[in-house]
Image (cartoon, rainbow, N blue to C red; front, side):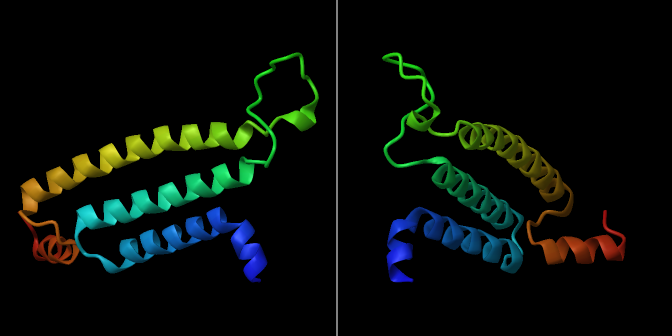
Length: 124
């Protein structure tokens, strides 16, 4: 097991980061901390995809020096997925922060339990 962990350390780091983000998302009551946990999880997924898409000894799929064999290049799809995911993640984070600002303006707290209690009581 130890030998595989050393060769796949990028995947192991991605799993640890995902666990940290997921734990943060579940255990925190503060909305900002939950958003940070979700961003950590996103980053872990992007790291995992980048690690899976990389092949030792191959280069980016840009034809240079006339080399056209497929075996000389890495697969560009994971890189494209990571770039698309980053764009979506930034948009979702901006939306979540905007909603958090509105919630804070209305309830004057970022604690999700307190907001829930205020909503059940009839809120403002």
